Length: 499
Image 1 (cartoon, one colour):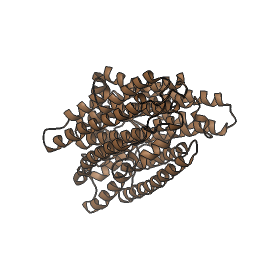
Image 2: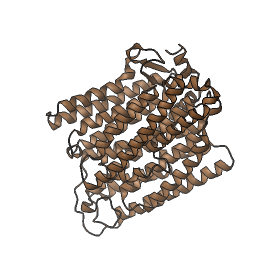
Image 3: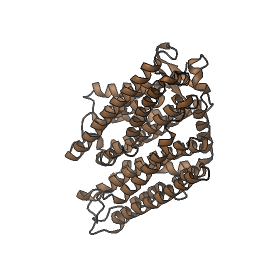
Image 4: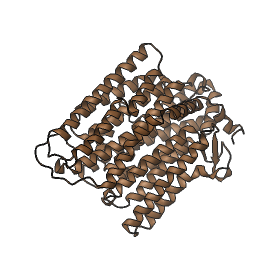
């Protein structure tokens, strides 16, 4: 058994516990420990990605309780990819936080590690109940991180976020209970086998449980009409927290892919692809509504939060296609959108620090201390988000548009994606002109901290890396999509065929 599978959970778990119990540690010691733990996840995730790339499905049975009994972790190409994206994003975000944002409240680094525990656990678990457990871990940590720094604005946004997610957790628990009551298991692979062999009389109840899970994942993933909590919550969070939250919506989308390609996938009979008719219109409506929100935004952080929702709609469109090419395009775009969104949240904070009391409000303000440097970084991020060449956003959208067959759906997708890209370009151009060109006085703020600048630039460079390695990455994404759609290795987990 390869014990590397459990390390992405043990590292943040023990680091967070140590930071929590050793509360009296000095500031520099806490920062060093948190940085080491977070960045150690990067080589670990790369190692797991290399292991997963052989196409073999790896299962880690805790306590040696073999599936479908006990708790299992499951590593395939998709989970390994999500672990790596999370590790890179979290590494740069915590580096940024160590320049002072972690001092705004107590136990920032412990909460940050528990957040990573929840996110990594959600990507690795092979059990539906433990997906619920890891959701709760990451949500409880995110509640505290969202309020980190206090202030009326954060408390108000945090209350909305907490109440909605508590409602979502209740629905999740009801859906999971229905599946367990009907099928007697919560192991995802075992659920897939039992759903395919279920009594037709149980079909309506199984469908109801599936739709409950879809609602929960739509809330977590910020899909229309359940995304209204996100813009205010993300805009009120501190910069490194908002950057880490860029992966949070992807957890919801990951859960949709995992549950509705495995449990309710090709082997589910009449329940197969039962949500396909919902995903397609929801994707287009989410994308369109988010672009309208971005155009109406009067604050740069709110604008960036709407861009996260735009990426959700785009990703959901790729997932809704249900094809290997569509999933591959969505996965490439997922990596791009996560890194760029995180970078832009950090960049918005750098801009706010040089605009004084006006912060990120999109109104005329004193000139920045470093308009050329920050303007160049903003230009790169904006062009990449809008989907223009030569950056990764262009390749991601091109892959998505090429993945759809000619027809009415293709016309709708092309129209929404291209018009949406134009809308994002207009919104970002307006924001850039107000921030960098229309200066009313001499600069009042301070120059950007070099470490903060390094963290922001590091994430932005991810767009160039994705372009430079587009060929191998596309091959990997296609292999990942093919693995997701081939259920035989997953079913072998409960048939004694797993390694």
